[in-house]
Image 1 (cartoon, rainbow, N blue to C red):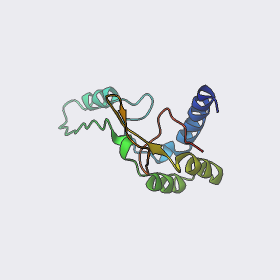
Image 2 (image 1 turned 180 degrees about the vertical axis):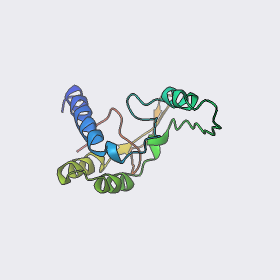
Image 3 (image 1 turned 30 degrees about the vertical axis):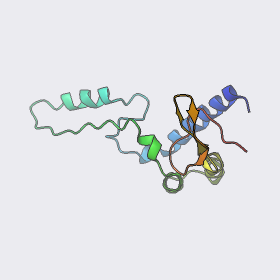
Image 4 (image 1 turned 135 degrees about the horizontal axis):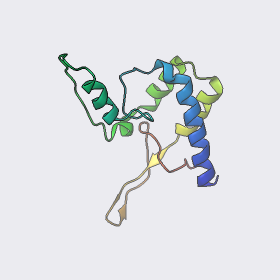
Length: 124
């Protein structure tokens, strides 16, 4: 599959999934969502003038590197995603591999069961 076509499909399906599950997300979640950045969180906190505020801001820069695929699929099932999309997601996530490059040396390919694919399609 052409990488550009794959990115378009990924964007389309991702938007559709978000529309389907958005009502299940916490209203106080800011990171990882369009138009809901940490800057928006700070602005919301500033609107509580005269009130005591306690806030914790955590930067999960590598958070998606640790998402367990089984937990992700279970949550999507609970959020009411269609069986067709769930099957597509399972196929997309299964048999994923990764390797590391340090300097000019590449490691062997190893299977992964967590993390979100970014810019690489699975080998069939």
